[in-house]
Amino acid sequence: MTNPFHMPDPRETTPSDGVRVRYAPSPTGFLHIGGLRTALYCELFARHHRGTFILRIEDTDRSRYVEGAIEDIYRSLETCGVIPDEGIWLDRKGSVVQRGDMGPYIQSERLDRYRAYADGLVQAGKAYVCFCSAERLEKVREEQRLSGRPMMYDGACRSLTMEESAKRVEAGEAHVTRLKLPKTGDVTVSDMIRGDVTFGWSTVDDQVIMKSDGFPTYHLAATCDDHDMDITHVIRGEEWLPSTPKHAFIYQALGWDMPKFAHLPLLLNPDKSKLSKRQGDVSVKDYLDKGYLPDALVNFVALLGWNPTGDREIYTHDELAAAFDMAKVNKAGAVFNIEKLDWLNSQYLKTMPTERYLTLTHPFLGNATDDGRFADRLLLMIRDRVVKTNDVTALTAPYLKEHLEYSNVSLPWKSMDTQSTRERLIACRERIEGLDDESVGDVTTLEHDLKALIAERGWGNGDTLWPLRVALSGMEKSPGPFELIVAFGKERALRRIDDALKAL
Image (cartoon, rainbow, N blue to C red; front, side, top):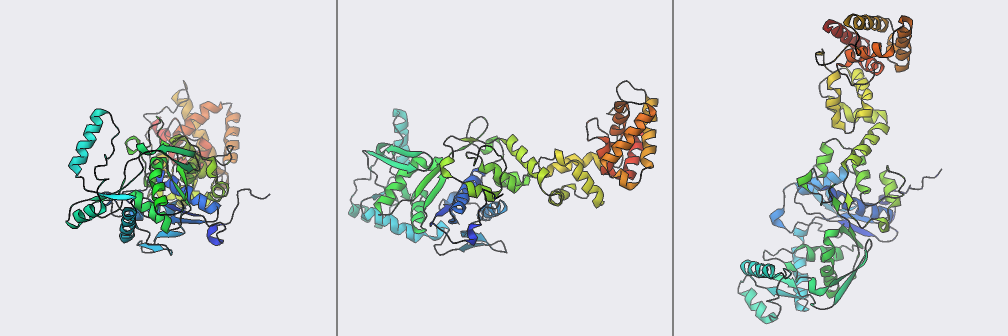
């Protein structure tokens, strides 16, 4: 049967409809889980349309720049299989390189272009130079706040002539450049998720587009870069929706065609507040370090606000790309449900090939055992209880001890006396010792043999198997005795029963 989700890798095909999508993070720290979703949706959209996925770095806010953040963003995306076709890349030495014909793909390397565009907007009367000091702006905001008015720039420099502005700039006066937005009427922007959204121009501030340090703000830089790089679709978080009128104004002022916009819903904490570090981990690195699998994390993040069919929870990356439809992305915020992520991750661990499971989990045993076969059996015994790979350390610790302490557990079953408990453990020990290695390595054979012993002696399953299980595990809650014996092997199992007999 043909897989309805199958599609070829777009990097091995010729783009069919010219779709070009970018993910443009700021290098201010580790990649946020919300950033992963935005990047993933960009990549899925591009792959679905056999287009191009671009990774661009928006580093014009130099006060928030974090050394090494670009490398982390790329590595996190690469680990999750969200790999750009163009833009930023890391070479084999881990150095940042750029690939593609429309670079530079780092905004701080494009400053001359932004200055030229800003000057062009000023010359066209679509922007103006503003000389207001930080102190004056703060005073205006405070007056607006006290009077209950919207806190916006009051337009003090809008009426300056270009000649007067030029003289003040030439004299070295500190300044910024602002958009000269309309103050009456409405503007409607079309969104692939939300449809047409209308804003009143009176509510839109004259945005700064060039700062006093000579760097552009996001609004100018992102818009100009999207034009220069032939971006056809801008997919970003809904926090940028109120800024879209400003971007539409720049496109119109410069005579450019606008890309299509899609503003993704927020990611929310269970209490419906915006997902933030104050309420838990938010970086992709946090989750990967905790033992979540990249495939499971991508699967989970993809379904935060969208589901291809509604009747499935687990999809491969290729299936997600083949089914991706921006029209089906929800408008409402998506709750980040950690229990759902835990469940998904455990399903990936349970269903992946055994060899891959063992490869992923072996490192979490550390140097606890040098017996590879025992380690494999132990890891397979706990497989159904592993939620994250680093759970392995705690789950296996009780079974790696040379000698157990039984003072905090009850070896006898319910009200059974010590002598009867000893009798049952000794009998089980003798039966296990008499079995060959093949029988001790098979749960079904062990269960048959030990239950036959119980029937021969006229004992009950509970009063025999309880002390045997506690003797083997040192715990009152653990896998069954047959699974434990298979995991331990004959010698380890017999030593643990001997330890329990000494404790009785």
